[in-house]
Structures are given as structure tokens and as C-alpha cells.
Length: 507
Image (tube, rainbow, N blue to C red; front, side):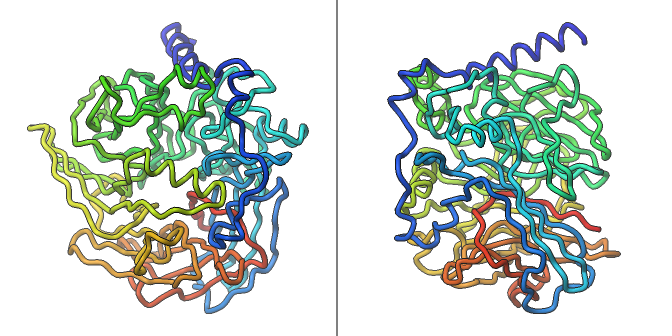
């Protein structure tokens, strides 16, 4: 191992370990997890947030209503927090739950099956054996009952998945990816891309270009690790660089020439963490004497050390749909979220079975001019999240963006999304389908029609929850005829916890 690489890894892991280690037990004990179950019965849309109790789920023949497209054959993998309570204690934040990976399999002839299994992280196995929480979580301050040597000791692998040849990775932005068997969902263990990268974070939002090249990153305060993998999942190159400090970087954009990061004015108060606060409670939005704008870090893909930093007015962005560059102009398709303190408060509300209104998040285009350091926003009106594009246009100019949306009147008074929205970025038009007040709609991904090369020719496939039936479902739409409604729906006989992100694998 090269001495410089070893030193970079040590510094990076030291930063991560400082975040994970926390204070002595008496301070942690002052801010425990909630006792007793939350009153989810008063908020039926929140019932899936109760989570499961460590058990796997399976259904060999979901009931399919409608005609399943013959060409839609393969597996929809999804990931999300699945376990929220142990020994009468409940996590204080939705992001804390242990990862539950689902596999919806479709045979293209009207048959389907479903399986959901918990990712067997070291944390999950230890807490299953003990029957209680043993380590702190992102949003819950718990007195550690086992050593904390780094972020992987808290890894819940609960955010997204990445399919590689013969492998399925369960992802969490703060630590290592976990390798799963794509057929059985059995956990094989954490992934180390190279010896010097062992234990370093591999974010939950890798970008896969049309040729199969995978780009990803990890952060810890003012350190940034960058990854480039080939289509087989082998490491091509990596680097650890400095970046402007930021407490949380969830997603990024890849264009033909650049990697682009939006660094919100969000810092971590380490004194509060050492005093027993959860990470979410120690985050400071636009702190006095700290950053007041969102900084845009632009990294040259050909040379990771060539970087530019621009500024835009303070904003929070969790998810990007895509991006492209045209000379010195970069365009980002994203969702502009509420400022972090308001958004985090809502996430903590729902984790305890309460709902006090939604914070709108808007579809937006952000254009950056590298020549002048100028920028221009174009912001839509709908409240949306989890945007996706046709994966065949990643890092290139695209036309179509799809996302769950809240379109019914009074959306701010209901939990979750009730619709799917299709945005035509070329024409500036949109179409939508609304399920109605009984449904909570989750992320839907684009699946290309076999043999087609035209952007948007295919299906939109994703999941949701029916509040009245108390059952989860998968729905499929013709992607360019969204307003016509689903062509088929696959119903499970049970409810699943709400998830975050997924990927479809044909075959």
C-alpha cells in the first residue's frame, strides 16, 4: 500500500471515527430513544413506519390486477428502513431503521413473487442476539454498549441498492456497501474496493453511465473520497481530497466532464455530539460564523484534483435526477427541498407516529456558468421527491423526468405522495396520474422496453401502500402515457415499511 494512500485513509477514518465514537455513556443516557410504541393508529398512513421486528417476508404469488407487460421481465430491488423498535425503545428518526431489501420478481408472463430480507450487518446481528439497541444511530442518541471503532459499527445499509454482475449491494452513505446474493438476498458481507479503502464510506447514490461506468463518493466533514468502477464492478481509480466542510452530502451529479456536489450550509456541532446529542440534533443550519450559502463543488472527472467552488443562495438538495454539461454550462435537474431544520423536524415527527404537515420540495433546474460563476434557477410548483430518468441518458442531456408528487388539494395536511408526475424538460410540459387519498406512492424507476433505444420508451415501475386495504403493492405504467393510469398492479397480502430507493434488473 502506498504510504500517501494509507495516510489519507487514516485521516479519513479518523474523521469518521470521531463522528461515531461519541461521549461516555452517562451523557448518552441523557438523550434516550423513545419509550413505548407511537400512536400510529391515529395516522393510518404512518402505519408502515412501525417497521417489522427482524422477520423476513415472502409471497410466492402476489395478486396481479390488469395485464402485466410481456416485455417487463426481471427484478425490482428496493431498500429502506425496516426495523424501528427493540425492547420497548423506538428510534427517534426515520433514517435510523435497519435495512430491509426487497426483491419483486416478474416473469413477463403475468407471474410474480416477492421477498424481503434484512441486511445482516454486524450491527444488526449483534442487536438481534442482544434483543436491544447497542449503538447510537444517525438521529437517535443511544449509549454504546459495544466498541465504536468507525462508522461501519453503526452501518444500517438501509438507503439504496446497486446491481453489479452477480452482486447486489445494499448501500448507506456513511459506511461500506454490503454485498448480497441477488437471488436469495443473503448477506455476504461488507465490501472493500481496495485494502486502503476498507471501512471508508461509499454513498447510497452511485451514478451509472450508459457504458456501465460507476461513479461514487463518500464524505466525512471536510474529506471527500471519489470512486470510479468499471462495468464489472472493479475499481479503476480513487482519490481522497479536501472539500469545503459540510455535515451531510446525500447525492451528487455526474455529467460528461464533471462530478458536481451541492454542499448546503450545514455543519456539525462536535461539542454537542460529545455532549450526547444525536447527529441530527447537532446539525446547525447557516451557523453564526459559518457558511451562509450553498457551495457547489465541481470536480473534473479526468483529474480529481482539478476542482472549482461556486456559490448559490442557501438551499437544501437531497436528490438529483440527472445533469449534463454544454461547454462551460452545467445543468442540474434536482429537487429543491425545504431547509434542513424544518425537514428534519417532520422526519422525526413521523418516526414517532405523528404528522404536523408536509414541507414542500420542488422540481428545479439549476444552470451553472463556469466562465462567470453565475447561476440561474427554474423552479416548479408541484411538491415532489425521488426523481428518476431513463438510465440510458445518465450524464447526458435528457428530456423526461419522473417523480412521486403530492397533487391533491390540501397535500400539506396528508403524509406522503398521492401521485406520479412526468416532466417533459424539452417542452416544459407535464402529465400526472393521481391514485387518490387512500394511497401513499413511493419511488418508481424507469424500465426500458426491450429492443428500444428511444429515451422514455418503456415503463415506470414502483411501489406504494394502500391505507384502506393496509397492503403494499407494485404498479407499472407506460412511461410516456402516465395519465392513462397503471396497466397492472401487483398486490401483496401484507404491508411493508416504506422504503427509499431501488433499481430494476432485467432478466
